[in-house]
Length: 277
Length: 230
Image 1 (tube, rainbow over the protein chains, first blue to last red):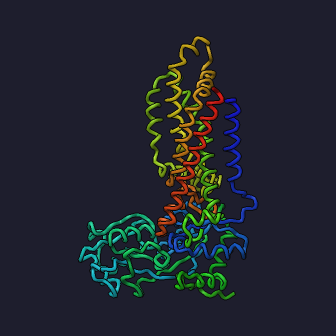
Image 2: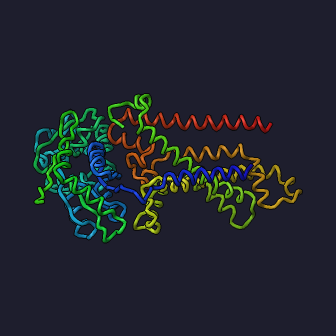
Image 3: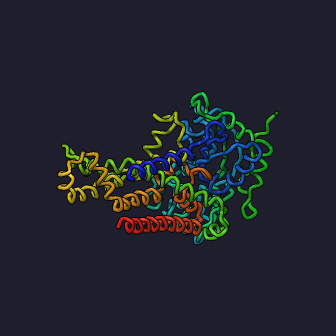
């Protein structure tokens, strides 16, 4: 009886494991390391079924910050990266981890703040706004996670002439989490936060938050896509990965990106280079 | 899962994505419990009966490992299974198999430590009898494990509870991939980060209800089989 129980448990465990194991022989799938903004905004939920219908390739998305997504790819654990921090992406390619970087689309960052606007930044340009926030020590939530948005935020502080590493006080709160949690935190502490517009439009827990600063050209947010270098990692599924990249920058993929709307608002604007072919 | 629906509507409509998530959560956690029982119960029984130098240290260590943080286990398994890691060639990172491995490591100490305590208490009761009958060490282990089977159910449930509730390990080694490695807990984390708090809370309640149902079923089985044994 005891023996029967043991065999039952083993049979169950191994049966489930076998059932769960990937069918590698005819595995038409790729792993894409991407950012929380593309997933949380629902863009992938819109794009991937279209891509699958066209190519019968399954795309498995790991949504991380840009820094972590590039790191996942650097370890060879993804086939494609789809992120938004140009300098980090270019370094990734020059370091030999990526094959080539393609522009895919853009949106923009917005400075989100409480309706009361305690720092008085509404309608100002982004540099003036950041200087006012620092001067008044108004609560500011930073992603603090090396994501694309975090890199952009750090670059903006620098442009505003503020050395944030030296200037930060209790008002500057690095939470080390994704865009959604950062917005949740800003809402809870009546603080300001830099967000990508896509996540903001699709975010459902706005509470007292609204857009404080937008439309400044320094808030431009470019997304790029890169195939992980198969010479570095032979496990990279280069054919399927390239098909995905080609589709994203094709007329069809670009149209699909432009067609994604929430409440009538377009979230991402395709801007891949037209290819000669 | 569509954002426009609440968790209750998803259940009532028989939402396929929700059921796939529930199915995966149960498959992963129950497999981990089964594997951890195969490793942890003999280990616990051995530790209860064997006498060797350093045994107390091992007992304390095992008890301490019950508090292993899931996120640390997840990170360790991630580094092992990563393409750049020692077991990278297996190519099982970001798959349910990787999630089962991480959860198994997480709950082996729980099941082993609780088994050790149960068997040790039982041993005090049966020591004279089993010594007089001159039963071998393995025989003692099997006899005591079998005799304690109803109490050991609690150890299994503790292990299952831990596995079903944790999010840190499965998030790191599974990657929370839609339709492939998304579990109840990672779905709750995702919906929270989208600011979709009602749906996140609803999914959380579904998870609690499932864990409750499994515990009720285990309790019922125990009462029923104890009656059978008499």
